[in-house]
Image 1 (spheres, rainbow, N blue to C red):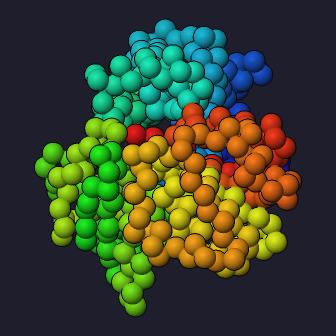
Image 2: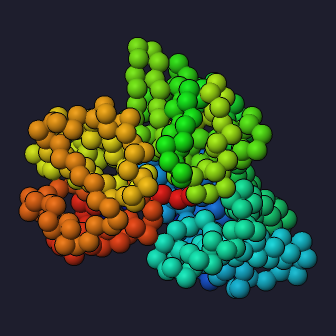
Length: 434
């Protein structure tokens, strides 16, 4: 298990779960005279609060942290810390008591909102449940008629309300508010977390470094579009396999919320860089992209991604196997182009008959004739038998596998590969959402 994840991921866990709450716990326990049992109840509340501040910080998707642990891992930490915070807060709520109405009510209101937020996020915003249980996916699809993505985003921001309620809750407890060192550090933590979040939401999106211009927007099939965007001159240049969060705040009829899309290919011309996105139009936001025209302004947040960093760590003798499902092939084309001349690369595309032509432009520029690149198409999903026929024994025993596609398809593919002998430590994925 430790070999599958970077050591930095475990350091992030330690920092959030232990190091962040520790100063406040020390200050509280030194300033409050009470029994160990009562102190533990107060500590539980403080720990839950700091963990909630931690997930607010993670919600800003810091790029430096993405490069260390990857955005999927960041989302997992975000979700699990939220659940753990609710568990610890529940212990605090159930074992503590106050005669003061404002203390009691602010604490309980925050707790109820946190319960609702965790339950809602588990079903609508996290893939853990719906990716594994088809019945849950069907229920989610039906309920999303009412709970649109933009509404879900606002509901998820109830974390801010929870934090503000808890802040008031702590400030009006006389025994706590009289401990000056604790209150000062408590307020510094709060202002820092909310300040970073406010900067990210309301200041950062207007930065010129994050703006781009649409060069082309064409339908490449009945259910897919390719969007080419020229990056600003000062934008950070993406690496092969990276992705961005795109938003179109100035286009009427298109949601202003950002959505993630992988880069299909990168075109560099002196000081200018253009990136192409291949987007499956199956959700409310993606269907509205037909309204985007050339010269329209787009906001880009990113680039994000760890595929390139993971691949670079391997020996050039280790085979690279890239498996894309449908439009999930998008980030793998540029990775193939980047590595096919330096290491054995096997690009595998499972697709429907209607998707055959969506990457024609990219394939025309891909060095299919490279002696180190093997490319194949396969209609519908690969079975275990298909993989055993297509993969060499060296690829199964030593290869680095990167899989991109719909969440359930990725999970099933990883399970199939594991059954034929591929170690889970050599499986890396990106799960697409609509």
